[in-house]
Length: 189
Image (cartoon, rainbow, N blue to C red; front, side, top):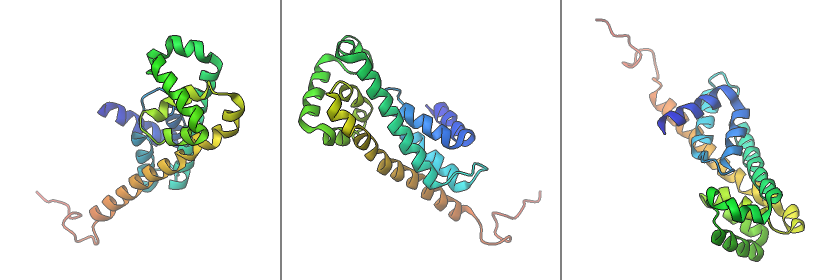
């Protein structure tokens, strides 16, 4: 896992906003990339300005758009495949028939509000696009974009702010105030 985090951090450092967008798009599909290892490192890169030119606002926008794009892909794939395909192969992507039936009942009852709140829950947020893709088109097409992106902005903002301000605090604590501080004095052996 440590190696994967290093790889994702490197991608964010070298890829900038595009890397944040694509990693968050993958995070919103069934690929298990936690946003906690995408957004805070991107915010750290923005805070330290390691030649990236990234800003905190840009990280939040890229994360929000990437999250929406990934969930939209899952929605349209589920819509294209249809219920029979999900019933047949859903068990391979953590959606067995009984869970699909419960999700459909939930979505019929709560509609867009249910999608929004499901997107706030870990693990469920990645899979809610699958049953949503099988709901009646008129209801989902009118509510899909707001419900799927409304959760992404606050979560991206919170994670970005935590990474951004955490590294700013570390930088301010570890940066000496004057050249005579012992930290800055070269050792003479």
